[in-house]
Amino acid sequence: MGTSTPAISEAPRLRRTLGLWDLILYGVIVIQPTAPMSVFGVLSQTGHGHVVTTILIAMVGMLFTAISYGRMARVYPSAGSAFTYVGQEVNSSLGFVTGWSMAMDYMLNPLICIIWCSKAAMNFAPQVPYMVWAVFFFALFTVLNLRGMKASARTNSVLAIGMGVVIAIFFIAAARYIFGHGHHDAQFYLRPFYDPQTFSTRALLGGTSLAVLTYIGFDGISTLSEEAVNPRRNILLATVLTCVIIGLLSAVQVYAAQLIWPSNEAFPDVDTAFVHVAGRAAGPWLFALVNLTLLTANIGSGMGAHLGAARLLYGMGRSNALPSAFFGAVDAKRHIPRNSVIFVGVVALLGAALISYELGAEMLNFGALIAFIGVNLAAFMHYYVRASEKKLTHLLPPLLGMGICLVLWLNLSKPAKIAGAVWVVAGLIYGAIKTSGFRHDLINFDPPPEEA
Image (cartoon, rainbow, N blue to C red; front, side):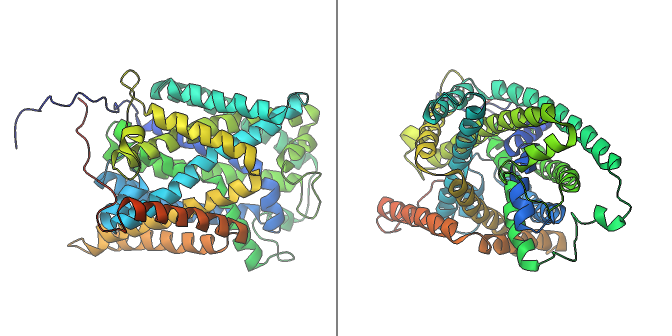
């Protein structure tokens, strides 16, 4: 081992600036602390009112997967995330398929945020056409992420504080409403967990598959390994803590909402059900405040997801899974993958013009769950199969995470499976052409030198 570090690399690289709380804030904003508000109506309808149970079951599956993500980030502190782990521990080609599926997942998140934000903005200014708003939010996400990582982290902090205040206001209003309309039947307070009159295993599984949307984005923390301080410790802690924080916060939110608006009452609009819950709890002012907050939350989520998608493409480009000259390039001034940031923005804008929010959300789950299964498999291979000492703590989390994610993937809708399969097949065709029929390695996993 040499004692000096060669100063031969002139190419700009990513810079380590993110502490533990930067990572947690990034994860919380990407997921959204108000995430269950957007899907509450659909969760209540699909799960027959068992909203809290679906949120908590999904949290368990995501928690096992978060442990696997954190452990694998210790072994491979690379921006490539899941595709790196699967490619190194299982198979290079399977790593590419995982990365290809993740690329769909990551690019769909800012895409559906653009759709949702554009339609929400039309509620305030209906005279402005949808596509004008779509272009506006595309430009907003892209420009802010081109400013650099620390600028995005500061923006995340402001958004987290603002949403936290609104959530606290909702809890106060909800408590006043619930206790002001007292119910002497104890069973009433347990129905969001279990209602014997409406319980169905099939409905519960269907609702849980949708509840995964509440957690989508936590895996993006692992893509920041090369920009994190002490990544071997902080990536694992941030990933697990983000899932726990979001899971518990979401459970309390939907519990209060379901008590205010029982599942046997129809919503005026299922997609915006939580806004109507807020209106019932405190009147028009809270209706408007929650509506504005959800718009703000989706802006924050869209920016964070845009950033995660760009860094995933950067990792794949640097590893030669995608054209490295374009996707693997880093801007010399701001140390960000500028080309990937712009590319994700353009794809999101085009998608917002062509597909619906519902299809985009369902396809997002398809790609995310494939990546989750792959990461759990990689953790199982590295920490148990190849380990000299077989530990139960290295066996159970990845196996349970894999099993739960597989069950949830099987419960996705048929249109999502078909659209996702088309994307995967397109990736296989690309990979076959790139490797002349998979005759040589698809990805180069050699890590770049660290920046001092």
